[in-house]
Image (cartoon, rainbow, N blue to C red; front, side, top):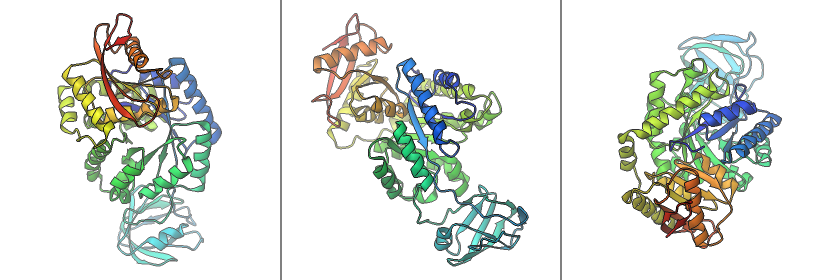
Length: 478
């Protein structure tokens, strides 16, 4: 199952894609890892999906990543006495701590932390931004607001606060229970919602204790101001454009997407572009031209992965959506402009031995026009370092650690193989050639470049580059 593209595809599972046959079809169509959204998935169903993915993984012999997406805090209004009201532009509307059902003048806001943090001039966006209020008077018991953009408002609609730094954790009691259930089940990535600051990521990592990697979802304006710290604390980044586009002007989202993609690449952290990428394919077997261009933009920018949400979870054409993304990725990466864009954006290597080795390996591989760049890696860090360089030849990562292999499923350009660790350097070189030959990356007589850490099996010791020739049966020699 060798992919003919470098960018990875993350497909969300749901009612349209939860049985073995469909997950198998999605993998064959191009999905490299799968997302389980805990907003809609009970623990029993999550465990069933993980077991099904592992079944598919074992039948293909390729590590498949599993990402569990935590719901995060959901801020909502209380109920109205008549179920709904119509808010008019310019009217005064009060949000308060009174649990009495609301009317056209007021409603309960069952979140004291919001009332405590609101200040005059702050915006409140209701029902995904359809209605907008501006706070005029605030206290711990109520907020008097003016309706700037009116509309119909009904029970339990969501509240977004783009201007307010909320003193709440990114993890609710539900998230903590979901997280522990996911970790016991053995998932690979945890996507953390409602991240406002690096401390939110650090809090989650203390609970996870290395049992999974953490992907910070950037969906709050507050996170934008602290992006460098959040990236440093995280293992990966997700650009959650849907919620970001609710709380920020829509026209800002494309430039922020580019900035985050480049910042994550500079930091050597995988970045996923998410939300509404092929939205029309929920109902249609073909996307709009604008959606194709949107996906292509993420590929040109060098993102590690692109994500399908409802398109694969609840849409009518989940396999077609994955297949379409796969074809877009392949076509963009054949474009000569693609390589020039990646090269122009290449960051300078960090001043570490591992990054210097990765950059040197990329230069050697491209200068000699080698067909593959092979990494022996215990933790996966060597492959991540090499992928940061966005080399022209494919990256073949060989690891004895299945957990590392599954986490690498989200990393740009990495074809991961789980194999017994090398006995010594000669065994490492020989089997690197055999594996690359077997998986179709090289032919007999060609040369490959091998990157590893010596002593073998010790994480974080990337310090060796070797060039080897592939023999008639795949084994490599110096």
